Length: 311
Image (cartoon, rainbow, N blue to C red; front, side, top):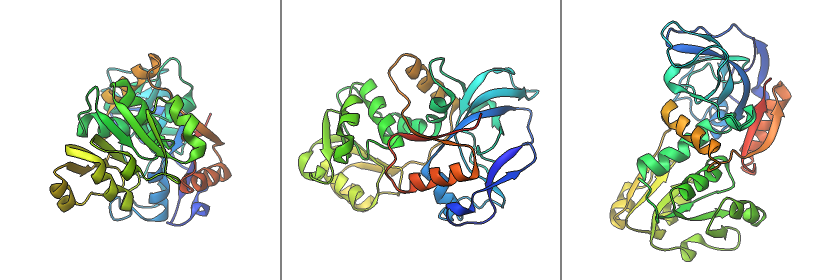
């Protein structure tokens, strides 16, 4: 099968098109014929070598951890899916990722694709959508009426987190540049903050939840907008525990756990019109296409998700 791989760490130039063997399937897995995948920051962070201690994979590595496609084959112990099913998934984080024509996925990580979504749209949901869901629901235990600040609302995780928070009946503030104001308002943001012109720390107060997608100084300042007992969850870096104690807030770092049941819930939300996949850019499944997609993701200026059309 065709795959885009890396044989060493480095820039986007390390992405190479190669013929590789089909993935070996286990009894509890299905073989998915890939129709689309999407780009996430973990892809280029791993490619650049930033995650080599955390994820010590052997080369060659196939990056990519979002899948949407059709089941080509099912393992002997698979009971809930059959050949021909349209599915999407956040597969396990292995060196055999989704920049490939086929991928083996555990049954428990699969979900049926929403009827009203294209393969590119479905592929844009698993990693970013599950991250947003686990930040808001699992870590923060979001309730109706909560005041929630979501940083970088125009990005992949941010744009889905806004919609999930609104579906729970939360009041949502979000930061982005001025050009994304209309986009964020269309997602239901109650308080838009143009971070180039306004300081969110001065504009907001007494918030229940902050979803930190930025880290650094922004993460520190975010502690000041929370009320006592508020929650800050970061997907970038572990928050300062001493500062959290001092402010009397719960703060933590979230590393996504793939989860087919939660993904099915997100799929239902898409079918009900409560969650809209937001594909801002689509690239072809070629060496050049992947290089350009990585460079766009690294620029931090992509709007919504970056999809790769495989079939």
